[in-house]
Image (cartoon, rainbow, N blue to C red):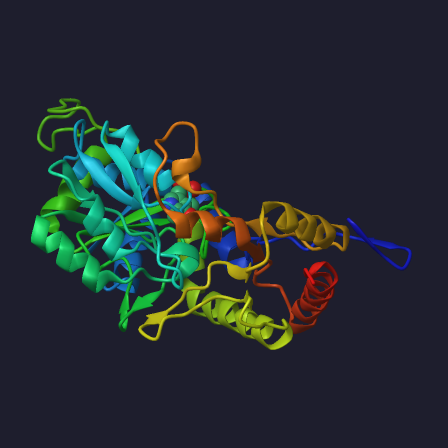
Amino acid sequence: MRKVGHELVALIPISKPSITDLEIRYVSDAVKSGWVSSLGPYIESFEKAFARFCDCKYALATSNGTTGLHLALEALRIGPGDEVIVPDLTFVATANAVSYTGATPIMVDIERDSLCIDSAAIRQAISPRTKAIIPVHLYGHPADMEPLKRIAAEYKLAVIEDAAEAHGAEYRGRRVGGLADCGVFSFYGNKIITTGEGGMLTTNDQSLYLRAKSLRDHAMSPDKRYWHEERGFNYRMTNMQAALGMAQLERIDELQSHRTQVVSWYREHIRTSPSIRLNYVAPWARSAYWMVCLEVDWFNEVRRSAFMNELRQRGIDSRPYFYPVSSMPMYKPAIAPVAAQKSAIGTNLPSYRELTEADVAWICKNVNELLAAIAPA
Ligand SMILES: *Cc1c(COP(=O)(O)O)cnc(C)c1O
């Protein structure tokens, strides 16, 4: 809570879902219909519409983005003894999903501008055990897919796009999710669109789709009920979640253009300089702007914490960039200096549907004041 005059006003959060009457109507319809589990008409319509949205042939709804990634890796038959290359700066789920299969995630460095996986670093990390690469479209900005796909073709590696943060982002005019063997999206509450918890696997490969679909439902035999040829999973989405997702997907253009608008308000109001930067966007990219990214070169973890605490005192929430996955206790250290540096200097600022230009201007005024106050001489 923050105090404005005598009034207590709620903290401006980093993000919150945008729920309208449409979402309420679809979810009520799903609940009232009795189809509350993973059978029901919203699942198929959500999958079909999402495939169309990504210019993909197939889409498969999952219980969340993490299970979507795990399912993709299992469908590609990645397992013990294999290595999968992932960027060091990402949400931990990317690496965890690899480790669930028994394979080893190999963390590599990122590009300074896009914050996405660096192809030169991928090349250096390839070993005879390497089976796949998972580029992450971090904070909504697409990874540079062309050089990465050339390496993948050369070494016969599978490529899974972790598009959990990038619904609608474009790489050279094409939507993410259909740029490689498969893509995985998340519909967690703070993602670009939400189903509460949920995920989606997208692909143009029919056999990959069919295998993932079977594994999602315990690999039950299609002709012999309750007979299972292999060990599968229950990674299904419910009809209620798909109903929420369907409403969100119908509104995605509106949500997306508001996100773009919010970023342009930030660009207008934050005093940037070569050492204080907002989201980078490559000339070949259209970012989905999942998060507003503020990088300050003279930040370190201590200065950044001081900045974030002060901001919170003034009623504005923020969050630090992810920690490098390779710095966490369950994984091996890696040499990824750019990921380490970016991780220490980046913060994310609020962006959600109800934010107005006045809100953003007020956030920026506080950011400008604080940065001026704590800047080193
Ligand atoms: C959110 C996220 C995931 C996982 O999605 P969940 O739906 O939370 O399981 C995976 N990768 C990245 C990059 C994410 O941001």
